[in-house]
Image (cartoon, rainbow, N blue to C red):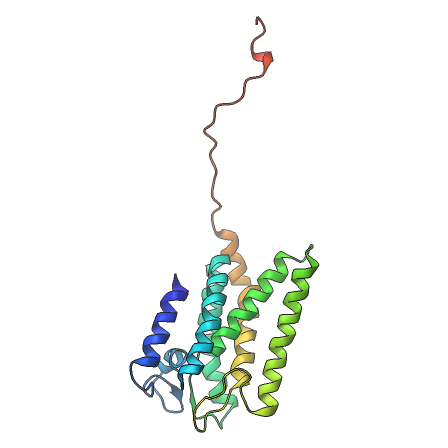
Length: 207
């Protein structure tokens, strides 16, 4: 699956080298827009990012690969560009957390749409998780400290802007007209019943 392949790439990028050539920053190579998501400052940051990325990625990929790929590709490009343009104090960016946010928003939208006609308990849990996600962004914004990772490294701070942009791209990936058209065009499986028809007594008028 694509999720597991990307997880393996993140592990390689984090542990094979210091990641300086992969991180995004001003004047960095254009391809670091993509590679920056797979390298991390510390093992703890990598662990938390991967622990969220794998289950969310598998769930989103299983539901709709089209939306999954759109959320990942869109957020992978938009997040570093937004950080570079709107957060001038951030000189280098690393981590999976922005992509995690995109997958969380995509999964929340998908579950809410599936359960909107019923299952109030599931809808309540989705709403509670969404509020908790918003609270996490607010906490990091106002405190300047990560909520779960205790150590990011000297001089490294969380980037709530990346999480907000990632979530926005996840919502966009779910509702984008292009994604909807592609999902509708996916051919449905045809089930062929090879069983012989049951014969009723009317087929044997002389019995």
